[in-house]
Structures are given as C-alpha cells and as structure tokens.
Length: 443
Image (cartoon, rainbow, N blue to C red; front, side):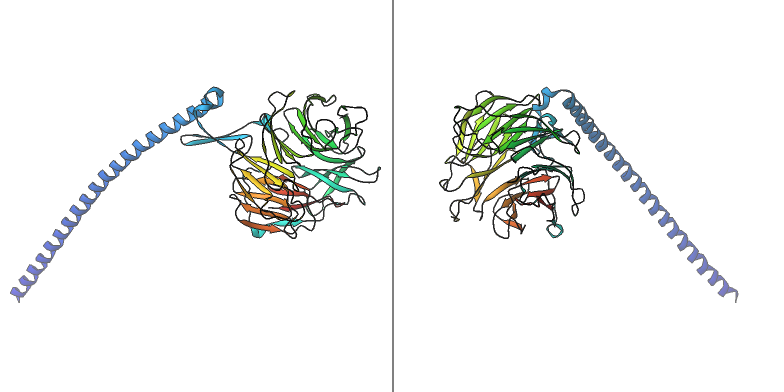
C-alpha cells in the first residue's frame, strides 16, 4: 500500500515537473515574442518618424512655395499651370494644388461650372416658361444665379422686349420686371449691374440698361453706329459680347463695318473705338484675351481678329469648310484652349458638310475634329468631359456628346427649335423663340 502511494507521488512529482517546464518554455517564448515585437515596433516607429519628418518637410516646403506663389506673381511661370475653365489656372505645387482665378477677365462671363457632373437618369425638364404676351417671341437669354435676363422681339410696338425673371422655383418662375426699349432686342450681355443689349431697330444698335434695382430696370444710354453715307440703310445689331469694359458688337451686312469695339467704361457715354468690315452678317462673338472670334455667314465661316490695338483690329486667320455656299457660322464657344464652331445646316442636310467643329487649339485651325449634326448647331458648350449642343434636329433638339465628339450619349426632345441657351451652374436655360420665353433642363 505504501509503495503504491510513493509511485503515485512520484507520478505526481513527474507531472508537476513537466508542467513547470511548459511554463518556463511558454514564458521564454512570450518573452522572446515581446522582445522581438518591441524591437520591431521600435524600428517601425523610427521608420514612421523618419517618413513623417520627410513628409512634413515636403509639406512645409510646399506651403512655403504656395505662400511665395500667392505673394509673388513673378514666380508663377516656375510652376506647372493647367487651364481650369477659361479664367482660372490649376497650379500643382508638390503635394498641394491651388486654383488661381482671374476675376477681372471673368467679370461678365457666365457662372457655368467648369466641371459639370450629371446622372442621365435624373435629368429633369421644365418647359412651362412664362407668358410674354401674344406674338412676343424670345430671342436671347443670360442667367445668373437663377435670375433670367431675357430679350424679345414683338411686332407690337407697345410690348416689352426685356424681362427679368426669378427662376428659383423651376416649376413656377416669376417675372420680376420688364421694360420696353423700342423696336426689339436680339442679344444681350450681362456684366454686374448693367445689361448691354443689341437692338434690332434703326434708331440705335446698342442700348445699356441699369439693373441695380431688378424691380425697376431703366435705359441709361444708347449708341447709333455712324453711317458711311446719309442714304445708308442702318444695320440691325445681331450679336454682342462683353469683356474688360468693352462691348463687341456684330451687325447685319450693310454699307459700313459689321464689327464694332465700344468703350463702355462710362456706361452713360459709350464710345466706338474701333471697327472691322466683314461684309457679312456676324452671328456670334467670343473674346478671349486679345483675340476676337467671329461666327459669320459667308465663305469665311469663322474669322479670328487680333484686337490688341482696339482701334485697328487685324484679321489673322479664318476658317472656310465645305458647304459654306449654303451654311453659315452660327455659334462659337471657347474652353480651356479649345475652340468650337457650330453651323446651320443649309436646308437639305449633306452629311459631308459637317455642322460641328472643335479645334484642339485656338491658334491652329487645321487641327480639328468635326461631326455632322442634322438640323445644325445653334449653340455650343464645351466642358472637359462633355459637349452640349442646341440643335434643330427633330426630336433631338438638345444633345450631349462625349469629349471626343464621336459618341452621342444623350438627346432630348424640347418641343421647339432653340435659338440659344445659357448655362447657370449646371443648368441649361433655352431661348424658345416663342411667347413662352424659355425652358430649363436641370442636369
């Protein structure tokens, strides 16, 4: 009996010794693991510290360069600058980027987004407009922050031809005020508290409207172009563009020049400072820096003028695509160095005579992409990823194309033939050419 107990005790002792050995091995393993982890963590922390110091130094250097860039305009040329819209530059400074805008040049331009993002399934269309009066047809439109400035032309002398409309509620827009300036208006440019209107009458070609108080707009001045001969028939003003306290006015063909540069630094006293004869109707004007782009109706469908010297515009280039005998330059747009020209269709559509042209640079008219657009292009909007068109194509009056102008990704039946459109943020406002005035497409 005693011997059994000893054996049992010996077994117990043996088991306890094995358990102690396991504990020692486990403890050593944990010690080794913690030791290795500590050194690994310490090494990682050292590497992270070195990386952090390096990144902070790079960030510090970028902030220093950014600060110098903001303070010193002379160093701008040392940085990579990319066009971002028409009046802004995207500058990359190592880890930082800044968009530098030229607010002086952009004064009077639309507030259309440089990058328009949209969901095709969520596009909404509002075609109700407002009633302008029987036979009072809309001709041109500009929109700023949902406030619509609309021109009309009526065969009734007493009807208003200028309207200011609140479209904050797309479903129920409200007329804020209206004004009768005379025979009718064909086109407008809005810059700050003034509207510059191209007039269709013979008394004046330019009218300036004060809109400091939108509820009470009033005419403050007007200008009549000088006649080369007393017997000359006065032209109708047809297109207009504002830039840097100058108005650029295009007229119908007549005995005198069709393109005028007008100093409106004092809106009360507009003064013609230069002109140029195209000997044809000017349908659209776009000014960028010291270059004027004109969409015209003769064999030179687009003219490019150097206007560095405002008193003596100089023709520097022109574009004459096939089909000019029946088609006319109608709409021009410019975005991030790219130039676009839209043409009318010229009656029967010839698929070889394209209506849409996009030039990769505004200085080389030989390098372009083009496309046939049934019905012609009546307004053009280029953005970085898409191209937006107002056309007279049946059941596809509004179209969206990809940036290569090779694939149409969306089309919309508007129910009318648009004369032009205005982009406000990412919304498109169409001139309907009827007495309902406008329609809105929310992208």
